[in-house]
Image 1: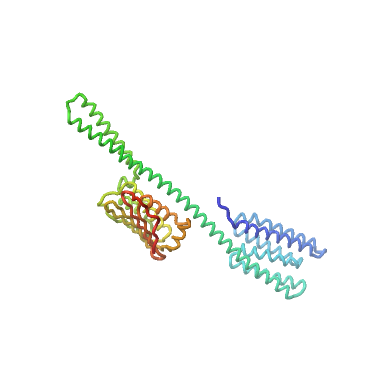
Image 2: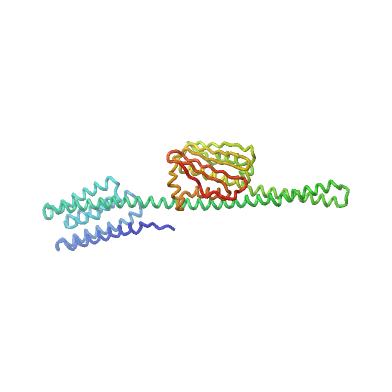
Length: 400
């Protein structure tokens, strides 16, 4: 489970603020005139009690309650300043509360008002002096600088947490996608092996038995030959049914091009987005393993275009040549910087989709090219042979 690295910093700032409030309040009571000390102590205790209640109010997460609590705290501070001018030093922790709890415009305004109140309180006690004016003003400036820095740090921490959450979600999606792709690839392999071994063998046995039955229809063993042929035919039918179940349904029922067109209508359709699928399959269907890989690659490329590129149009093109199948997915989105992609991919960070496509293409001995540039859209082009090549491409070629 991820732990926020900046949490100790925020905790330290909060603890420091609490200790500052308690320490200054205790100092105000100690420095008060003996005659006024009971009243000052009572006001200080009330202020600390209200301040402590702020934790429960913060957990309620209601802005109205928070502002009411801050108003009560400010009134108690003003009363304490009237009773003991030394309480003007409590304005410094109040600055941070104003900046943190009030809206962006009201926070600095409250700091200015509190600064004027502190200056007036100091002047009422010992007259208007340079130190009595400059001290609160400098404290207000320091508080504003620290408060703005705290907000920027908190905003950066929130953005970092969001990025980490997206990274974790992307890793989970990648793991799920890889598991699904692995299962589909294994199903395709089993289907292919069944077709090339068991189904072909049963088909040959059935044909040979049929020839034997016709060659000597009057022999004593013809009934056994016929029974064997019928049994082989039944087993062949079961084997073909099993192969059909192992083959991905969209491909088994329609073929690759028809499956892509169906996805364009059922899954890729979005308001304001046009997805076009075209191509030719006159040269027949590619092997199941190749068709499955191309289908998953198209799904991933279109999903990236839908989620990240802001595209308004996506074109999917499938071309089938003897022994080779080509797939191209092109969008008119925002694109990206190829140099950044190459650097991140080399470092093992980011662009998990491209990495997964590259690995899938490498396993099948194909070629992958990604053409993109900021503001020029992206094109993913894949070429896979029917029979895996002896040497696989070393990686995705990303170019402008």
